[in-house]
Amino acid sequence: MRCQERFYEIYKKEPEGLSFCPYRVCPIGAHSDHQLGKITGLAIDKGIHIAYSPKQNGVIELSSLQFKKRAQWHVRAIPEEKQNDWADYLRGATKELFQIYPLRVGLSGVIEGSLPIGGLSSSAAVTISFMKALCQVNDLHLADNELITMAMAAENKYVGVSSGKLDQSCEVFSKKDHLLYLDTLDDSYELIPASPEMKPYEIAIFFSGVERTLAGSKFNMRVDECKSAAYALKAYAGMEYGKFNETHLREVPREVFETYKDRLPDNWRKRALHWYTEFDRVQKGAEAWRKGDIEEYGRLSFESGRSSIEAWETGSPELKKIYDIMTRTDGIYGGRFSGAGFKGCCMALIDPSFKDSIFEKVEREYLAEFPDLKGHYSAYVCHSADGVKI
Image (cartoon, rainbow, N blue to C red; front, side):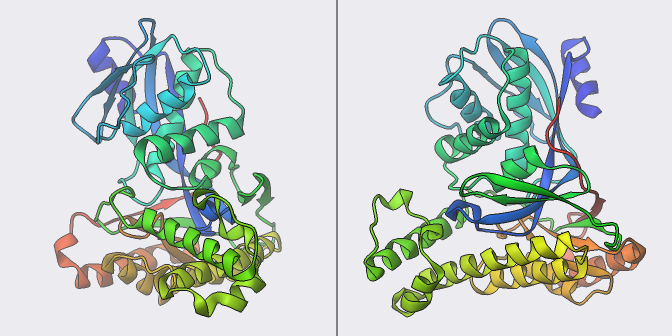
């Protein structure tokens, strides 16, 4: 690993540990978790590695192969406000841990990401990989749900992104050759094995070549629009409602939405429409996977992508182009934007026997539309993987 080599260059010794957290894809279930919906997802065999050793003085010192600036803080003296750099997720994670556990030992570490940044939940992956390493050097043993909740809280509270737990759950719970089917209302989940009757598949990742940050995008606005729709629908239906921030579409029955949807502002109605239809797609998708019908699962993933464009109203021109090409390419079962959908990448479930023709067509048609992104666009084949590990 390059991170191990770089660690030796900096500290003149081998690292004592290596933490790995995979990236994730969510073929069906996008933009649902923050409203306590259901999701399906897969961890992939690419992700974040951190080579590390303990520092007994409590200092955390981190370098990244993707960023030039080194970050440093003490486990008991985390800056109260985010510093607006790549390490904010990790400061937030340290803060969440220190509020509950007596952190004493810091660490020196070098971080390496195995794919370009954008769309695969690299922020959640680096946070979880870091938390596992910090817990290891402090002899702490978090339950999976606690790790997920703390990593999400670091993103919500410290960084300021109103995300749900989809990313963290996929990266912790996932198992190779299984589909994670999770209900974010109560964290109940099922790992559905790939049926012996299922056609072979691989996971293709198409990077647009355009980077993005969730906090600086319209992501938080979309979440607020969902909550606004839920709040209004409760009022129209005479349902009890409490604090705005504690309101979710999951609490509003579908029939209430259908009865009062025309009273909602257009944007609120569209966001809610995506959420309710995505809820249905997830349940149908889980059953399709259980039966080994990857073609139906893929069709539902394409449908999810279309809803993200038309009802959720995300998708940069670049991602919309990749999605459009994917829908017209033989050998792709299905796919959609990966991540928030403002920039980043698209993922697809593909028939391995079509891999070469798929990659050639997507690159050719995409760069014909966006020639300035030649040298920035890239594509990869991945496979399903287990969750985080030391």
